[in-house]
Image (cartoon, rainbow, N blue to C red; front, top):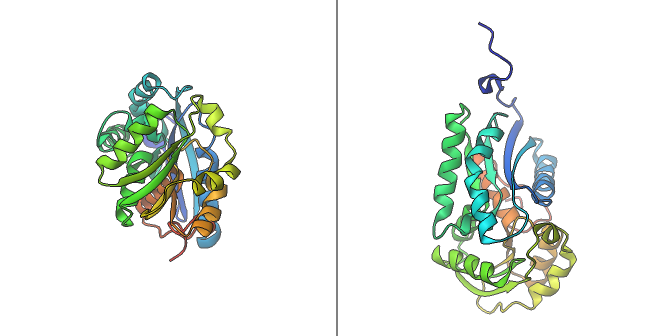
Length: 263
């Protein structure tokens, strides 16, 4: 019997030499679908392996507790939709939406997405930006950090407490206090080196230059790392690191900090 072309089980696995990456992003996000593909373009340039991106969007305009909670409720539906493309790994790219759920919430969020993809007939690896950030810091031995966020002070405090709940001391946290998510995406990354210089860095083992997947930072990562002599991690680079790990691929990305640099 011929299967209907709209049946999810008709989706073909990725051909050899190609990996499909699913993204779940806030509807107002304008950064993750630029920074992640750029990182993986550099990976492809170095390795020859190709990556494609397939997105589902969940409504979220203002970075408020209420809108973040509503976005989380849509995660399973988004996972079902994006898994129709038979993706190899799904990245849930809204760090603060997950952290707003309380301590350790990334584990439950990742499980919800994995369950939805599996029940849809297309199991996939799952990475959340929240989980990726804290796991990447721990995996690389960075137990004391200074962070930059675009959030209002209360949300920045919540992010700080979430990271500290994972056993990582936050020595300093700068809140840029931009509530509108589209405006966060318009922030100029050229201002980040100056902000990083102002961080209290004594005793820090790394800088989290953007604890937000919407705040553009890729253009500043290498410059800040070179200037300050500390490893620089962002929500986006940590997500890329874990996506590569999920796929079993060694990082080979230039110009994005030592986290993703070729071994």
